[in-house]
Amino acid sequence: MKNTLALAIALTSFSAAAQESMITELESGDLWLRGGYSSATFEFDAKSQRTGEKLSAEVDVDISEVIFATSLNSIGGLTPTLGGSVANVDADDDSFTLYGLFAGGLFKAKNQKTYGIFGTYNSSDDDDVRDTLGLDIRVQTSSVASDVYNEVMIDTEYEFKNDGTSGGHSLDVSTVTRFYINPQLDFETLASLTLKTDTDYPDDISESHDPSIKFGAQLNVNLVESITLEVGVIKSFASSVADYDGHKVDEDEDVTVMTRF
Image (cartoon, rainbow, N blue to C red; front, side):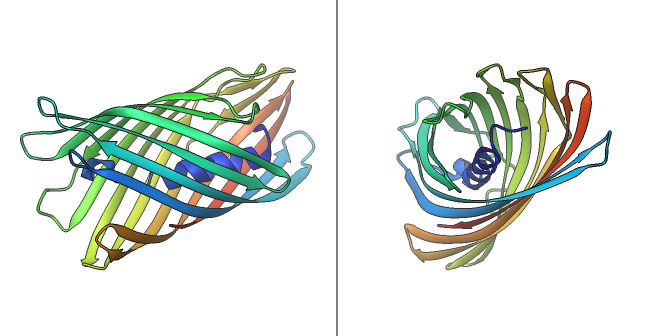
């Protein structure tokens, strides 16, 4: 029920990798640059509620991406922060580019914890990929002196109508925790829950989405002060019911993403 299986896995992979950044760690004047490669496998299973007929498919995707963020000089306690991303996606015979922009600000509370709010825009050079607008909130929940750093993320996303396809807007609540091991090593974990509205397609086709979950783990190797090598895996599970003008089909999606930066 997605535009294509390749588009679905590409967007899932890119979204998951981009969420790894701890943006609340940025200070005024910082410039953060991230480049890397992700490989992913998308497994799709469908079963007709009427006939019991089953269908399975698997798609492999490669993504090369560059993400940057910078914080400007603070103004009255607010640190303006902006950034962008470009990702090249290759999936079977499908190849396209994803673009992302965000802008907002960071501020410190009296307890010195950092909070952030950002507006986002995402697009692509492929007409089948729907543009999105989002509002993201970032909250540092760990204490300032702790060796364990935690950031909670609340992301909302509105998808523009495209070629008769509408709906599919989402709310994602996730948390990333970093455990300090030594000056050269630290370890991160990711957990996420996503809620999504029904999606309507042309020809009386619709899709209702169950809550989806995502888990991940990542090892960071600090090669020098300004260069970090990251190796991780992210796993996500989603299910939905597609309605083809009264013929309902159960759908399950299993995504595995390997990240190397």
